Image 1 (cartoon, rainbow, N blue to C red):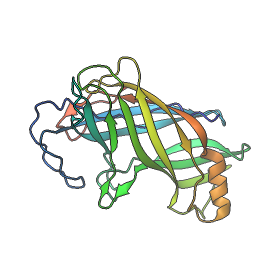
Image 2: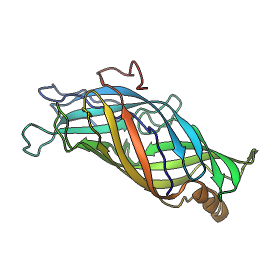
Image 3: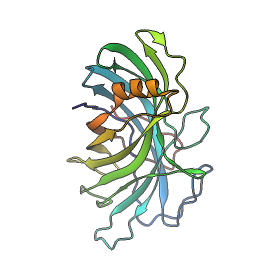
Image 4: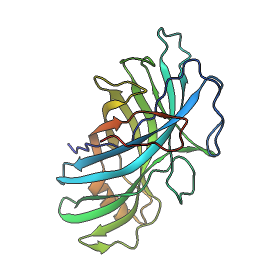
Length: 243
């Protein structure tokens, strides 16, 4: 079973009780009244076990519009809509993660290095948020993150040689579901874990490249650990990233 251990992102959460309405931001839908926003830093590393290759994720920030769920829970459950804060030069202000390198094996034999990007699925003009909910705002509980994303491969080298026929639309959809570990607090951070299935890639330039990229990355039950830092309420960029 292929295994990916690492941090894809910090999950930005804040205390939403009694907050005034948050101001809308260019590139995001206007949040309802009673919600506030904040950012958080993230850092991480991972491993593709099938190739016994490790990778390090770049520093990344997320933005969250956070309040309480309208489900009658007592104490109130958190409801956070999470957005990636895109790096400078991106087409979109939100929803596009930074690119990073991953070393692996093609068909289990050929040394390969891929340039990977994690992006949120877009719903019209806006990215589709990842949702954190299911647990109380101020204490530990059954917090769960769910959402959709795309893995994109924008560059590929085989045995040190660039594959020039790879297009910029090489991608595979993934569904995220991560559950909070012991000690996790929405506003203070902690770990969330789960597993993702990575299906076949498509749009890589031709069917042979689709199969090549699929052999390097795709597979079921990829274990994932996410490490969240503490929230920076109302700040455009987090002060620090979790270790």
